[in-house]
Structure formats: C-alpha cells, structure tokens
Amino acid sequence: MRRRDLLQAAASGALLASLPAARAAERPRLRLAGPWASVSLPLVRIADAGTLPGVAAQVDFTPWRNPDELRLLALDGGADVLAVPTNVAANLYNRGVPLRLVNVSTWGILWIVSRRAPVATLAELRGQAIALPFRGDMPDIVFQLVARAQGLDPRRDFELNYVASPMDAMQLLLARRIDHALIAEPAASMALHKSGSFPLSVVAPELHRALDLQREWGRVFQRPPRMPQAGIAVLGALRDDDDAVARIHAAYADALAGCLAEADACGAAFSARQDRLAPEAVAASLRASPLQAVPAGEAREALEFFYRQLHAAQPALVGGKLPDARFYGVRG
View 1: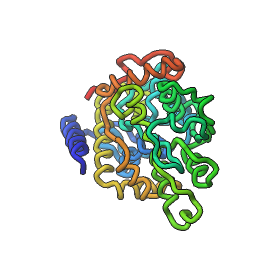
View 2: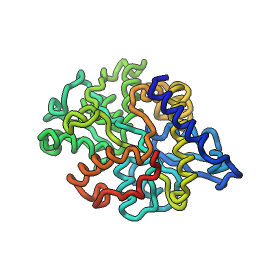
View 3: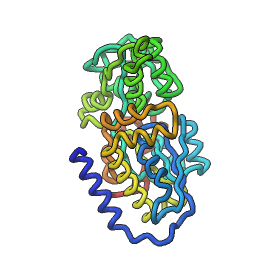
C-alpha cells in the first residue's frame, strides 16, 4: 500500500472515529448512483457492504450510463449520493438543484490510447482522427481546453469522431477503424487488456497509452499534473444533514483506500456487477490512476481554477458562474 494511501486510510478512519456514535439508522435506504468508471469503485464497495452505519440501514447502487441519465437522476431525485463530473455538479448547483459536492476523488483519468507509440504533446496528433466520447461533456471539454491552450483549434486541427461512450471508443480502436481515442479509466485499461489478450490479440492492434491528458493539462496551464475531474455529491434533503454528509465522505474515503490496497478484489467485485470491464482491467486502472478522496472544501482552489477555464470557454458549462461557498459540502 502506497504511503499516500496509508495516510488517506488513516485520515478517513480518524474521521469515522470522531463522529458521534451511531444511533438507529436514520434512513431506511440510501441510493447511490455512478458510472462504470473509477469514481464509482468506492460506491460499489459501500453498496456491497449493504449498510452505512449512522446513515442508512440499506444501501444500493444504480449505474448511470451517459450524462443525460446522470442529469435525469439529479433532476428527478433518483439518487441520494451521485458520482458526478465536477463541471456537471457545478452546473446543476447553479441551476437550482439541491446539491452539495462532498469530495473530489478522481484527479484525472483521461488518456489518449493509440496505435502509435507515446507522443510528447497533443500537437503531435494534429491532422489525425481521434474518437471522443460524450460530446460536450468532460472528456470533450478537457480535450478542447488543452488543445486551445497550446494554440490548436480542435475543430480544424483534428478530425474528431464523437461516440456515445468510452467503450464505443475502445471498440473503434480494437476494430482498427481509428488510430487514436480519448478514453477514461477503466476503459483505457480494458482496451490495453483486450489488445493483449488471446484470441483477440491475434487480430487487434498493439495499443499504447500515448498521452496522459492530466500531464498535458499541467504542462499547458503550468499547474500540477492532476485535474479535479470527478467526485461525489449529495442531493435533496441529505445535503442539509452535516453529520450524514461527513459520514458519507468518511465511508467513501475508507472504501477508496480499501480498493487501492486490494486492487484485485476490488476489480473482481466491480466486474461482478457488469460484463463489459474485466476484473484485471479494473485492477490495472486502480494502479494507474490518481485517486484520492479530498474533501470538497480542501479541493476548492483546484476546482475554481478548473471552473474559471470552463467559464472563460463557455459559461453555460458551469451554469453561468462559479458556485458559492455552500456548494463545497465537506471542509476537511
């Protein structure tokens, strides 16, 4: 277990210990929701436990498959705790959805996976075709920001092929229909796993992690090579329950530390709930990803820098303004 993860586990354990002793569960049920991506790994671990002491007697997990499903869950009150891209959380909050961001846990899991060997900068792919999932949402947004920051016009300098999901981008690569794709973990690790697995390896191309988009973000914006990409938010009346919000953050941080320490077991548990991501790929993504559950209040500076870039490019991406202090649900 890495030193950072030991510190994270100790901190979350200390927070849990400092909370008031649990009485009877306050809620009969807590509904968790998230994508089949790294940000949801701790939520699945919590749901597998079946209960969250001091918060709910029963906990379950529902996947959302695309940004439209995510927004519908938030607007219709279909979840209590939602794994969410940070820009979507800000947008929903500024549009009046009763939401608080609990933490940021995913600090950049975007890779350009390619049939080419690694490249030094995005500019080296000028003029080439790149598959991108979720047009107008997180992968596309980051690509556009990083491209424009180094003087590239995403529409003119690249041939952008938009697809419905990271798994669709992966399939285009494996079918040799495209040479480059922007893919989030764990789908990036799944693409590499499939390209090296028999019998698919007989026909699939050799693939590489060509460009770490987090490092490219840090380079062009002169920032650390990490980006506040996703975390969890609480919705509805739950956002006003400070004790429950603190317990949810502590449980999530503890579950994330457990996943990092037991990557193979965590990958197996995650894969047992769906059939598109192999356990080996999920475990590999845990080892390759910058995952750390940072309370929203502590992440505020990094978030506001990110939001300012989004606002400058297209104010509607964050709901027209930066969120106010109430948005940041856990101060640390």
